[in-house]
Length: 635
Image (cartoon, rainbow, N blue to C red; front, side, top):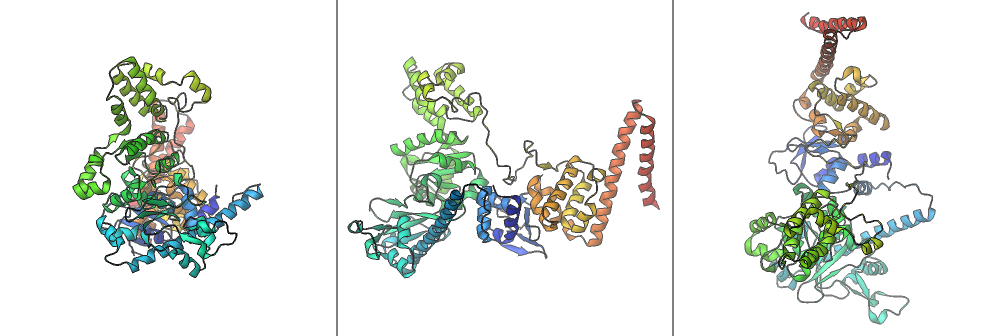
């Protein structure tokens, strides 16, 4: 894991407003503040309410109440994990990744070599895409490519957004481009972009004449990582040429089981809509995406894997499978269910009329009809259950046959609540007790021999919960999560404490005024005390750099809006003299509240006769102090 110093270093080496500007146009509002339309996909505002503080490196939307630092933004908008964000920001700022200590020098050397190879491969892929993209300028109106684009109704803006390209029919177009630009043919071969001719495979030394282009006369789909790195390519033939689809072979950058096509573009929509549609191929993805249904990913034409399930889990728990309606597609859909259930995902299936694909359906019935289909998508388990009961006659053999078919699915479920509901439904249909179904799902003695530790059996004896990285920034939500004990809840603090907090973040002079004082003598609420103690701790850890406080503490509080009031009216418009007066008023108000609380407490003691002479003296002293502020105000 990277050190806190490194995490902080790369955060402040990047300009938050520049990163956000890639998603929303920001305009200068004041010396420190920029404003623009909220970039969150589910907040379609017309009047700008999104604010960014350049000096403090934080953002906040006064409309949808979301805010945070650069890590929060990358997680919410681009779907990055915390590690993804660190690597992205380090690369963006040209800062070498921090070396993780290891006693294995060989391992470190190998790791460095792999990073160098990956960088070279990414650069080569970029060059290849540059070549493929250059073909657009040579496109004629009556070409096969133009006919393909028109027939499939592929929009120019979608081509641009997804970086789509095409390859011509030449056998050595990319090779000539590589030679002219002094690119390594050996590495292009490792990437699978060029192949060695059969007649040259025996040669020790190869020249450009010994290779040919892999992707010829094809529509090109660049495949990106979630960070936007160009990993590989997919190519679809324009006509009936087989194979219809060609993917780059697997290499150090590209593992099909760990990559979902389009996720780099769709992650923010998946997060905001809290569900994902999984399709099989590039064209299905393209059809939905350009129709405005952007919370979609594709499996590169391969079966859905546990790696894919783990990736999806980072963005949503709700998955809708939209695979081909033929037998192969139905089989792939059913096989996907236990894989997704093992990651505690909720799975539905979407079936289109007459086995049509998304493109045909949308062209025939329109986007709104497709959205209605999405709303009618069925729980995949119930779909499989119904299918198995089609020929059910109620006999003992039928019951056991259904149990055997559903056992792998039910025993893969980690969400015990969901499992209980499915078992209850199955028991009702079989007209058996739930206990009978549970016993029937237990592994046989033979299965037990091969499964010494059956972690998947009925969730047995183990409560499984999603692990969370304590270093990962807390995602903005609408309710306070009590399980996150390191999060400071500012929901119920006094207004004067809230103003004091925002004054301390707005102007360093107010923060320094409170620095070193015992916060329990100033604040009333324990949460406010905890906040100021945390703030001072961060201040010390960051070499007393005041501007870093807001960005560092924002993910430690709930709600984030509580510490953003200094960025909005009226506080943002107050003059220094007015702010000084507000600071003074807050301190006086809190002193009064503390005196009132102490008086109430001691009064109760006196009434209950549980007081000493010392308690009585304290009571009199507080009463005197409580009256003095009022007397001062009158004079």
